[in-house]
Length: 176
Ligand SMILES: C[S@@+](CC[C@H](N)C(=O)[O-])C[C@H]1O[C@@H](n2cnc3c(N)ncnc32)[C@H](O)[C@@H]1O
Image (cartoon, rainbow, N blue to C red; front, side, top):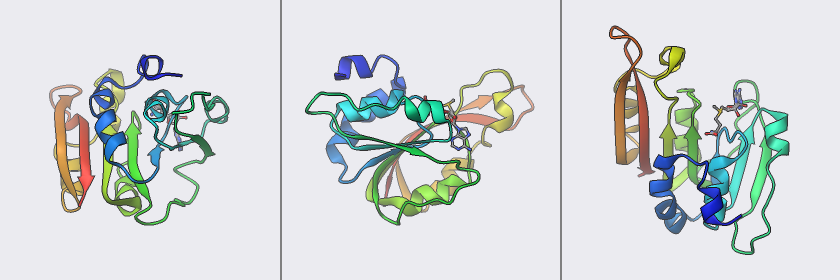
C-alpha cells in the first residue's frame, strides 16, 4: 500500500505529524492499541517498523505487510493491556501512538519505554455519547507527562455535559 492509500483512513491529526515522526525516529513505532491498523499502515508507508498491539484476535489477524519495498514491517502482537505484562524494555521505542483508547495508567509505561527523543502521539476518544465518562480531566495528561516530555502540540477540548470535568486531548510530545 502506498501513502495515498494508507492515509485514507488514518487519524487526520496524526497525518499532520507522521512524516516528522518517521524522519526523526531511531527505533520502532508501537501502535497501542492498533485496531485494524489504519494508523500503523500510515507509519509503515513512511518506512517505519510498527509493532501493532491489540487484544482483538481478528484485528491482529488482519495486520498484513504490504509488498512495497519501501514499506516498514508491521509486527502483530496479541496482548491484553489490562491483563498481560508490559514487555517493552526501557528506552527501546522510537514512537508510541495511542489513539482512541484511554488508559492513563499506561502513560508511565510509555515514558519508560520510549527512547530519549522518542515521540508520543495521543488522541483520545471524540466527544460523543458517553465517551466523556472515560475521558481525562482537563490538565490531567499534561500534568502526568510534563516532567518527562516536551509538548510539540497539545489541544484539550471540554467534553460531555456542562458539569462534567472531562476533555478530549490530542498531543504530540517528545521525551526529554
Ligand atoms: C476504538 S479502537 C481504536 C483502534 C486504533 N487505535 C484506531 O485508532 O483505529 C480501540 C481498540 O482497543 C482495543 N482494546 C480494547 N481493550 C483492550 C485491551 N484491554 N488490550 C488491548 N487492546 C484493547 C480494541 O480491540 C480496539 O481495537
